[in-house]
Image (cartoon, rainbow, N blue to C red):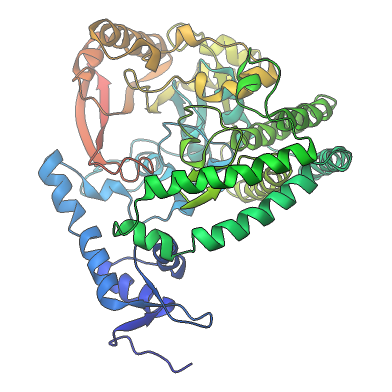
Length: 531
């Protein structure tokens, strides 16, 4: 094919990525351009397998995208917005590097933010290094363990605390040392058992036939990327057309269900596992978990359990667009607005189990080469009352003695927000499966308590109590960093209640919070010291 010059109207994918990179002043990959084509943002031109795009259309798209988001966000959120703390230069693979993507978790901050405040660099905003190698840092709202993971990379010892037993399990699994061969051996055994189970029923045969029918149907009625392109330009009424074709394909789906004897729903809906999983999925989960329970090595058992938990989260009976915010269980094919075609629920965990098993081992290997600190552990407990020294003593006496002698240098943490997330409920499937004790009533600022006056007062009391409890383990000249979107202006009162003062605030834009929410949003990193 004759090479198309960059100045011409049509660009190859490679030329388009080069042009966009220069236009935006940051790297735009071939995959980024292909995504725009696939999802109808820009039109595909070309035949015989050669994809070209119209340069003017690409310019139009990026003109809207690049309409100085920095400028418009500052106009909306204030000139004190520190854009350098947006970390927009990092790709998603970098903000979810190594063990940070070991398991999904709502409300976690990106590792680059933690690194910024924990490492020893200084700049025009961070004029002092607050922590150094060998220090001890605390995260009393540990969540999935981001602070622990990054402090370990920097040679800083860390303690996490979380009221959620499953959160603590995730965090500890991220920072442990493992026998990788043992993990791979157990994964292999489980995979063989699962495959053997599947050969004795019609699930694989059914799903193969269903995928064949879906491919033919979607190719005819939802050609990619033309369909999405036309929807974007309102040439097709997506809602009406999608509903019509969804109903049309259901006739094909129902015939396959009857032919292969597929049982879609469980007989009872008493628990999360009953409600949100098809019978076939539930059977496979139980098969895998029965093997996991026989693993002797606790570290191996825990990390393989995390792989199973990550797997079953992806296999819940919901639409692709509602995976993070469950609405109603779905057990049949449906029109998927996210992918612009008819999609199906999952009928087996095998593919996700194999994918996440391989991914987990890879991430553990990556992180094992970066770890530098000797001590890191996440305690399960209430940060308002926990005795850190006593709890650590029962787990790692040497670490407990170090904390008693050296003291904690400070905190880097993202406390829960008022009425935003139910931290136990987001992992309800894991609590059901593993039989972990739930302590929803001890969460600070949970979604189920709302954002009314009483909820705010309870929140202030809770966060203040945490700071008052843990500060007795601190050195005198401590540094506390708390990341919060304080839209109710609660943190001045919290600091005062804890005998602390806010000495600085770093206001940062939070980019790409969710797929559905692109509105301007910021959070503040409050720097607190002893009053």
